[in-house]
Length: 175
Image (tube, rainbow, N blue to C red):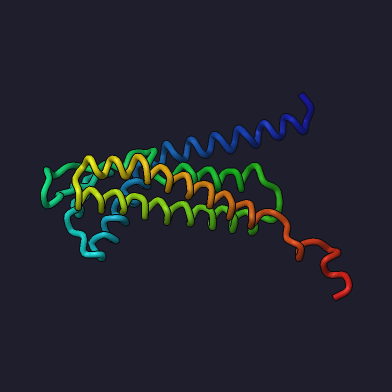
């Protein structure tokens, strides 16, 4: 194994290790923060039938259906994508730290916002139409929104990392 390959392997192991370790350590407090944020936003929007938070769950009490607990599972959280962007920027991408940090922060912010909207949408449907409707929205629309969030986040991430015309020295010649 040559030196370049060994260095690349170490960077890849660090990326995966930090992302997986961070997810393991942060997933429960992160999900609690996500559900509290969504419930706070819903209460501001005058949706009070999903306001009792129990850890990573919220009690949803539809007017014309049985109440149920909606759980924000680890796979429903934005933490995985946020850690992926952060660790890729930290260990795998070269370039100025400020540019990598900006790209990871912008992509992460986009993913977080879309995920909070996704959770709020699912809970809003649950409040109005019951648990079966919420599961359907979560499974179909929620999956599409999650996919959109990651793809849009990746697009922003790459846009901010890739060089622009103004970054090339020849762009300044003749000005």
